[in-house]
Image (cartoon, rainbow, N blue to C red):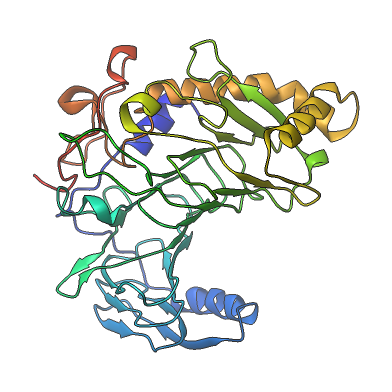
Length: 385
């Protein structure tokens, strides 16, 4: 995928008034998929709530529920327990109700096959951006976290099988790509752009995991915390190539690269030091305190440095093969990052204003030029006209 196409897709916005697409209803396929999921689900599952193509209200129990509205513009009410909400292509325009303290709840978009999924799970910015938190597929489906019951609270997000742009707030959050294309996973716990900017977000300890199905570049940008985790299992250290990279072209190798396949990698922006102006202007500290592999866990710079040295000296096996593609993949990541708004912008919004940012009518943004990729975050509601 070219960097310009990735940039255009990751910065597109859905127009709030756009009507979701409607495809023929195929309940058999969805029910079958749910039943397969239930076979491997926790025995603590309390209830399954399965919607239809019509608009309806689906209400869970005080236990751990699985809820899917299917098509139709639904209201989804989880109540207490650790609930999971499943979404597939053409899910409609849904409203989510999950009160604080009602368990550890999950949005699962694995059923979204080809579309870009945008999730802005930043409740701290609701006061300035009333549409936040929210999730949507540009130009199609959406989830509103805001209702008469208040602002819904979600702790875990699993992306779709296409590209994902997932952003969290004060957390703690767990973020997982859904497999497939390029993904951006960023948590803003620790964000601070000054008194005149957006509301400051308290630091949080977050988990990034689920990279086994990755086929392209997954970008991880964490803003702060003392117990953040990057879980690379089932990969072992022998399955990957680990290196330090200068991805902001300032002469310092500030970011961590983990190559997992001939076309796939995980990038942790700012793991070793400040990334571009994100640290000085926005308070970003990208260091991940714990890196977990199947055969080793690193909680110090020394352990990771040793693994990096081993990768660099590999002359045979999988690591040696991955070393041959690492420079090319790093350049792809560098090109993507140069074309995207600098980390610190919510997924689906842009710092580029009217020229470089998304068109609020839902049109794709004009490609950013080198001069307009460092603007401050947009402070307008992405769904306002």
